[in-house]
Image 1 (cartoon, rainbow, N blue to C red):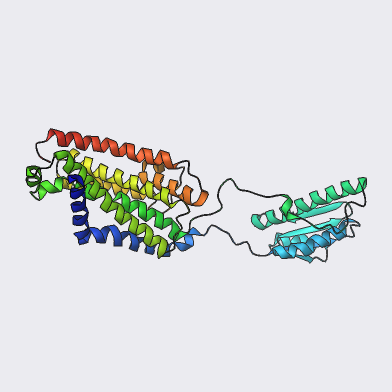
Image 2 (cartoon, rainbow, N blue to C red):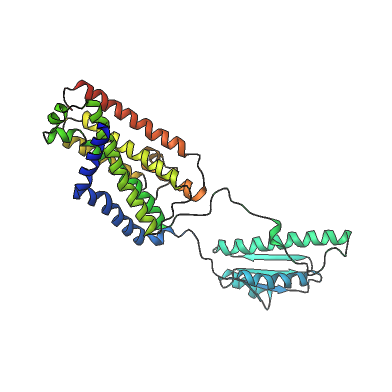
Length: 367
């Protein structure tokens, strides 16, 4: 019962501190809004190709011409515009000068295609379309030789014969979606700062002796303050997350409960780190400085301010990089394989710092 009373007192004390509320709530929300708005153009994952212009010259190809004309009509729906060229030389020259994206010459022996290397995207589109057409035409001719009545000249194409499914999710986070996750995980890591003053602050305020004089065991004080601090900081993180979801309409996916658990383990990790650092450093200022430096480095190399390359060696050194990557996989790929390893790693590192704090408290006469 004493543990819950101490935890409740810790929560009330944290929320009465205006500076704590300002820093833990307004700071990430304002930063989320600024970065998500200013860098919105940097998160456009699609490329506009525009219309593709192709010249062609039909030199009376015989049976191939009706198929070509059918393809030209169908290509207009895909914004591929075919225009007839007067002769071979003008068609080649138009491609060389960049006035056309491709030149197609239809002769008695087949189709010859010319593209410009300076515009590889549009050239690849034309090449892919023609390769598909030639393959389909050859198949149709082969079948018609066996059964001429089976393949009509104006056979309708069916796109549903082949279904494409990417191994990687095509969904990508927008700027606001990205910074909603990044700022939420970053502010969870900032829980290390109040954690560094969790027990040392009692000694600084000269209230540690009064706590020890009360009919409460030292272990109850330690657990109660730890639970209360975790609850208070997790509530701040939850408010930031819900604000981003309801006001900024950030996408947190369909597995929100798993995201909550991940953030809770990160808060436990951050507070345990700050608590352990308060006993490893000689002064409160030194503990706070060390915690702040590590938080800033983790934020910078963990993608809090800008996206980073997941394959970079330094990306794996930051707990934020691991957290962000796991959450993005949950939200945009429905990949839950990294949830348990990330949670266990957070709890494992937190346990190491808690052991340091527990051993230090046990050796001291006071807190």
